Structures are given as C-alpha cells and as structure tokens.
Length: 124
Image (cartoon, rainbow, N blue to C red; front, top):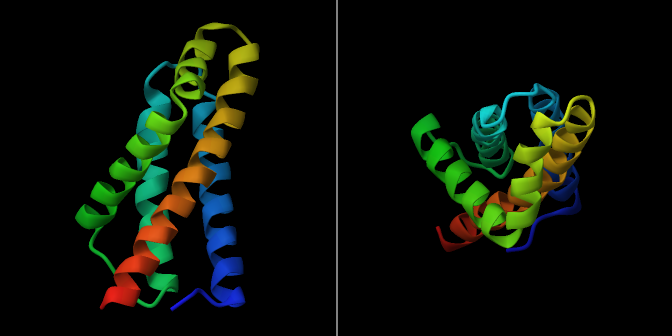
C-alpha cells in the first residue's frame, strides 16, 4: 500500500521539523556533539513517523532504526559527514556549515525511515 498524500505531507513536516531542531544543536562548535544530537532527533523522529503511519515503536527500537538510518546516510554521503565535523573547528564558518549539512543529512535519513516503516506496515 502506498502512502496517502496526507501521510506524505505529515511525514515531510515531521522530518523537516526534527531536522531543523537537530541543526540548532549542530551549531555548537564541538566536534562529535552533532552525532549525539542527530541520533536523538532521529530517535524522536522515528517514533513520530511510526505513530503517523499507524503504529508505535518503543524508544529502543526507534533508536536502533535511527542509528541504522544515520549509518546508511553517512555511507551515502561520507564527505558531507567529514566536512560537517571538521567545519566545527573553524570559528563562525563551522556554525554555518555544520547545521546546514545536518539538515540535508537528517532529511535524507528521515525518508529512509519512512520507507522502512511503510514496508513494515505493508508486510504486516
């Protein structure tokens, strides 16, 4: 079963709002902090997406899904990941680069989660 237009719009809103929230956390000039912020954002994103798509998942499952989605995204975009973390050591410029890269990576990872959740829903 495909997603309805309403589900797609709601998923877009959930993904975008979580990505923007993670971007704020990635503005801190601390290398490595972004990964923790991204993981938290992805975990809550996974739970919200599952709820919107008609299910619910425990936080531990959401965290596992989040980590897997982040890994897939990092493997697809390793240079962006490296630039995001290295940019944090550059004063001011890093606070602009890291958040913008974080948004694009979390948006991409969010749609990976949606695909996984829809496949699980359709196979149930």
